[in-house]
Length: 341
Image (cartoon, rainbow, N blue to C red; front, side, top):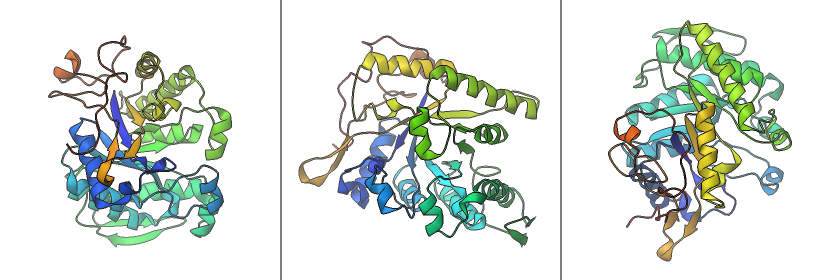
């Protein structure tokens, strides 16, 4: 199981130090040093004040924040979680993402979705009713720009002739793209790309994001099988797909409960076919205004979170782990600060 650290300004009441150069440097470098796999940023460029007051969250510009993290790290992957493609001209998006991938040495992962905030679509002068067709055409443009020079495109919303968007990304064909969202359409898109990033939440909670709910691990497992089967049918082989999930346990570090139940939850997700789990670390202000967070380290040459590396990890195998019993390290173990020593 891999773990993505969702940059904690998505938490209401975050430490203001998180939006300083020193604070972001500490968090990004500590996530890398502790052995986590990715750091992610969300996107809400023009949310309504009403949404923020109703439990929404602030955000930074994704590509700017990811480029900053690229400059202060060397291993951890950099993730858009998620990029709302219909908000953007895809040629500008392709260039911004290519730049982050290039400057990071090929560490960018794109998680993309269609968006759900009506007020934000309005502010950005984008017709929300067209979000699905804008998403599909924008993704087609991204792929084309990254793979073809020169690139030509004639679509319903975008037209280009002889485009050479150079220098291109480091990763051949461009960064991997995971599709966010729980709908059947999102799952179909995921099967045609590099993976799926659903939310495991109740139907009531999912309504706020305009996506169907996924309330149980069994339901999630059935959907994962559907995506993998569809990808294999399209490619004629077992396609290399990544499934990353956000569940209510994503906030475990902020509101710790039973460590044994948390480990069991992660084991159930692994058995269901999940490859990566999203974590939201707690953040406080320490003496001198430094940013700290309770992320436990991952130790060893092939580390994993919540304890010491397993024999499987030490052997270089990255299969999702099976459920583990409490008492061998884990969420209940002491959690050092993310602040520099």
